[in-house]
Image (cartoon, rainbow, N blue to C red; front, side):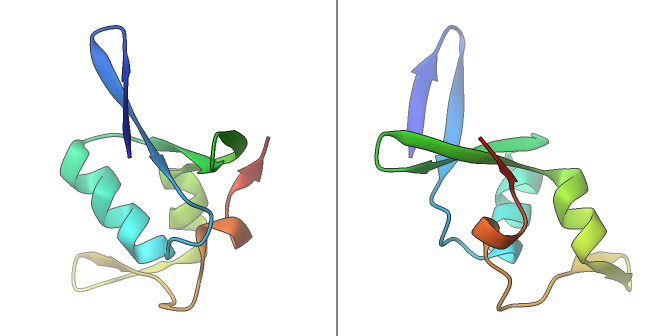
Amino acid sequence: MRMPFLEREIIVVAPELDAAAAWRMMQRESIRHLLVMRGSTLVGMISDRDLLARGHWRHGALELDPKLLIVHAMSPA
């Protein structure tokens, strides 16, 4: 979901999103943080550092456990 904010949109994700999808989104959009929302309630934030700490580099790409969900890696609100 995208939310208009000033001149740039804020991209939000659900806590059930897998971490690899969040990483790809951050890379595609050239951003370092995503707000994590359940409905209209802010439940946390996930950063590239949160994901880097839980993955490992292999052949120049970050590998994350495909079962890792944002809810288990994010900083709570």
